[in-house]
Image (cartoon, one colour):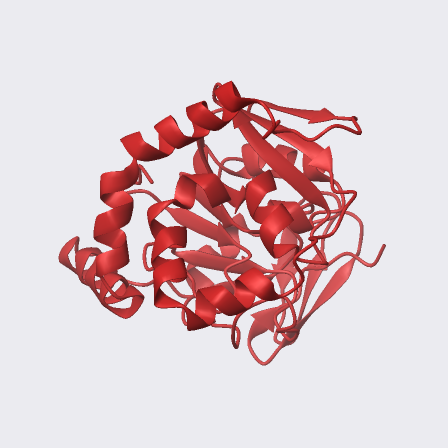
Amino acid sequence: MNIKPEDFVLEIGSGHNPKPRSDVLCDKLPEDDAQRGGKIVHDRPFIAADGQYLPFADKSFDYIISCHVLEHAENPALFLSELMRVGKAGYIETPTEIGEKLYGWEYHKWVFKSDSDKLIIKKKTNDSQFGQLFHHLYTTDHNYAQFHTTHHNLFLIQYEWSGKIDYDIVESSNDLIDLNNIDVVKSLVDKQASAGVSGTIKSLVPSSLRQLAKGAIVKSQGRSRKTLKDIQNIIVCPKCKNQVQWHEDFISCLNCNSTYPICDGIPYLLLTL
């Protein structure tokens, strides 16, 4: 991720493992851990909000991180339009179609392909044929886990954008990736081979040490964590995008009169649709 030291960074769907570089965290389901790998973390300014209806002013962030969120969206076009409205640049990560076929998360709604710097998005129609097999292998078999990490390009879409997100939502009964085409397969493998060194290095370093190193880099840049009070001026009504007023235990919109609760210090800027 090409994040500059001075960039103001939002992370959407931050969940249980937010990136050390994120200044503000946003998650739609802070009290529901069913679709994440652990308990929610809110160790910095945290807003409960839907990525499709972000409660932030236009271009209020230099960079937006969205890892494994877009595949959950009801309306990916609306989600992506909100990213472009609120941020100047960002990073999107989703499973590839191959990853979705192998692992088959039942709550994912879309499959993806990256084609010449464009995201191709298609409605997910089939669950994995392999059930929990590859999930189990990843957590119990070191050799398979290492293969997964060193071949991450086969399993992950890693898409970075600046200014505009180029994407197409397609309607098709065909797979996005034709694995029966040997030229397609060779292209995938060749692309993976060219990126394999970084994946190999990553696989040799425990994730806990990588997180500590990233945290140390943030501290070395002299960045201090912001508080919720520091970001109140960029919060807007998620419904009408107009100015809000903060109260002790709720937030009110000065335009449409909508109100949003603040519970245990967390603003819940969620629409009731």
